[in-house]
Image (cartoon, rainbow, N blue to C red):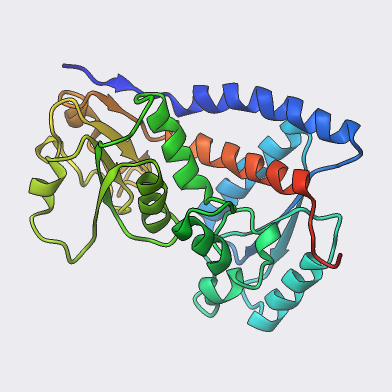
Length: 287
């Protein structure tokens, strides 16, 4: 068996054709979608991701502004910037880029973003909406994963999904999103036992642990779908690799995402879609 490769780059490019048309439609209505990206410090990987977001925004016709703050920036200064942007009705979406310098607490600062401008769905309000099944902003990477799974399964009802990782950015919101799609979901983490045995029961296996080439075919049930969220720099070469040993797992899986060109391009595309969703309803801040 050779797994079908789920080409996230191609799927994202197709999605962006529709997003570009949607931007034009909003502009005809007098709405100019705007997003601000807040970056603190000089993390090299973060700089690469920011450049990709800025490039796609330009291609789609979305106005993007990047606020680059030095490593020494205080919490108070970041809070003041976010509050200023919250009050700016011309700015529809705010993204706080991670990682932050060790002196700053991401959870504390992201919750300063107004929920109606929280483009990555990471405030406690939007995560609470996802928990309860209400309408809110859904985090971009879980949305990307759900979309990619939809290219394999028209209906996820009753499938067993195993998620490796319980982060607030990927693992936890993805667990809720898949539960809302009627999956049976098992979430594994660093304290879980019998990890490989549990993984082999999965119809859908999602790895978001950030460990390069950690997951081999001994974790995989024949025919399962593998979604690799990991983006890791391999020691020595500096090559970007996923959590999954792609060559080995491809021999047994039914479908698999590559790294790069799997989840990553879809995540950036959903960042833009969330921006357009927020621009469509309009910010209610200050109204």
